[in-house]
Length: 100
Image (cartoon, rainbow, N blue to C red; front, side, top):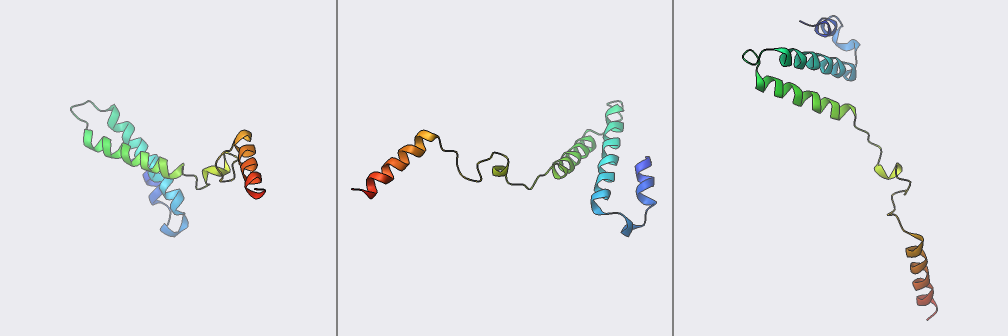
């Protein structure tokens, strides 16, 4: 049994957050994956290793999730990018429509 399992069990259930628990589980899964990959192919369980790596990937995906909308990163404010030529063309058409 690895150090993280002992660490995980030595703390009372209500004393650590679910995020910390998930980090400890992630650490344990990575240790399990490393142990599985170091086994001889006759001793290893390919399906188990695949499941462990899938779980690691899902936890990585969760931990790397950023709920910030993408448009806050691309400086468009949620509006589609418009070139200056398109902006002037649109303004000119609007001007002609208003004065015709």
